[in-house]
Every structure is written in C-alpha cells, then in structure tokens.
Image 1 (tube, rainbow, N blue to C red):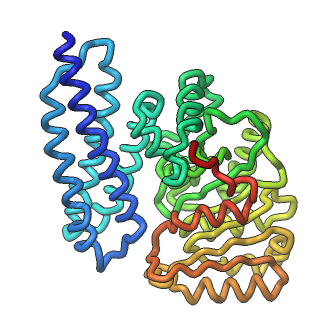
Image 2: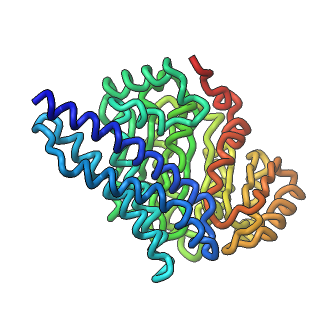
Image 3: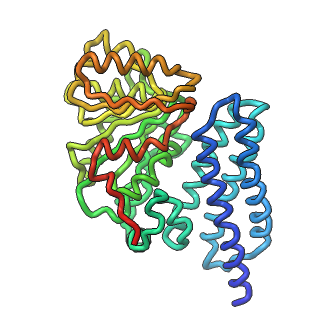
Length: 368
C-alpha cells in the first residue's frame, strides 16, 4: 500500500506542473487570440499540450484508493478539459467556433482543479498573481481559510448559473475575507456565460481580497437592442450581494468585455445606479446613451476605457470616439489603448485597473 501511494504521489508531482503550465499557456493564447494568427498560437502551445498528454496517459494507469477517489476525479476532469481545449484549438481551420469552445473548456479545467488549492501548493500558487506566489504567509492563510470556509459564504459560488442556464450569476468570495471590501461585477461578451468569464478575475480577487460576481445575460447576449431583459436582474443581484456580504458602497465596479462592455456603460448610466466606477473592455458607446440623455449619469462615475489597436470586431477608432464623447461631457476617463491587442480580454491590464479603482487593492501582500 505504501509503495502504491508513493507511485501516486510521484505521478501527481509529475502531472500537476504540466497541467498548470498548459493552463497558463492557454492564457497567453487567449490574450493574443486573433483569427489570422491562430496557427502560430497552436505551435506555441503544442509542446505544453503534448507533454500533458504523455503525463496524463501515465497517470491514468494508476489506481486511487477509495478515500482519495475525489482527488482522482478532480485531476482527471481538469486534465480532460485542458486536453479538450488543446484539441479544439488545433481544429481552428475546420471552424473558428472550435477555438471558442476550446476557451470554454479551459475555464472548466480551472473550475475542476480549483478545490485542490487547499492541498496542493502549486495549485494554490496558480490561483494567485505571480508577484505573491512566494508569499508563504498568504498561501497558508488561504489553505486554512479554504478548509474552514462555510459553504455558500466563501469560495466559488453558483446562483442558478449552471452552463445550461441563463440569468443567474457565478461569484468568487475570497475564503480569507474578514472585512468590508470592494465589489467587481464582470459582464461576459456575446454568447458567453458568467460561469466562464468569472475565471478572468479569480486570481486577482484571491490575491487582493475583493468579491467578483459574473452574471449571465438572460438571452444569448445583453439587452443592447429592443426590450430590456437584464437590468432588473443585475440590480437585484447587487442587492443580494450587499445583503449577504460587507460591501464598500464607494467601490462597486461594473466592467465587461465586448457586448458586456457596451452594456456595462448602458447599465451604469442609469439614474440611481449603484455602480461607482465603469471599466469597459473592447466595447462601444451605444448610441441610445446619447439619444436618451443617459450619458449624463456617467459624469460622476470614473471610466477606465480599454481597447486594443488590432481589434477586428470593434475597430479602435470606436474607442477613440467614445473617449472623446465622454471627455467632452466632463467624464473622468482613463483611456488605455493596448498596442497589438486583438478583440480579446486584456487581462494584463487588471493590476493597473484595480489600483485605479481602489488604491487599497493595489498593495498586494509582499513576499515573506
């Protein structure tokens, strides 16, 4: 039995780093995703994916004792989703929708492996920003908090937001949270889902200690045309979070990507909106904001506007125009034009965004 456990430990020790490096490689793919360059991205990730295939094949030959079966399931699921993402990316020439499915599989892989952060240091470190991965005090604090966390109060939460449903929300509440904190509301892009988009923010929320919620639109995308379906549910979600956690009412950020960015501006520019800051990524300024006069509600809400110079869906000129329109009204705009960024989520901009949003979130804990 001891020999078998030693083999298991050795296999896990060999497999987990390959899994995590492949997941991080996918983050680079996502950050640089641009249809004409997909072939180059496949070549970039190939060594990571191939190494994971070999390690996973060896891992699957081992048997787990019954009391460790749940660990086997989590590792199997994480590897399976990661390799599904790798396979989908390689099939980009058949249909670019395969690439979108690959990105969703990447999110599911993170969801599968996250619970192991409480027992495996590399996983714990993966879900932190690189600058604090060496902070032993923080790492231990998070392990202790995860092991003691009260269900439905901390960690990963799902409110009627399974991936076959729409209209709910997913959330991450830091397990070690013990004070009033800022709230980030992150809106996915068209045809997206909050359960997936949440993972674009978990590492930062966990490192800096703020709550992030990722709602899912009622329909395939947000209410940008015609009848309004999403605003009431979004505001109800904010009230629910405020009733159940201590939220700093002066720091409630509404952010979004693509259609989510466009809708973030629309939802925040409402009378008596609870949102104090707005951060649209790769969206556009909806014409209804000007025709209804609602754009005036942005005057007291600082805006952090992010757009890539190589955006193929919404050309960067639309962001420049939005910046001019907002600035001319007296809105406090921080405009960040990212050279070379395509129509993809500029996650590398989050540290600067968070320090702009709430300076107390900028001081991530130093190494110990």
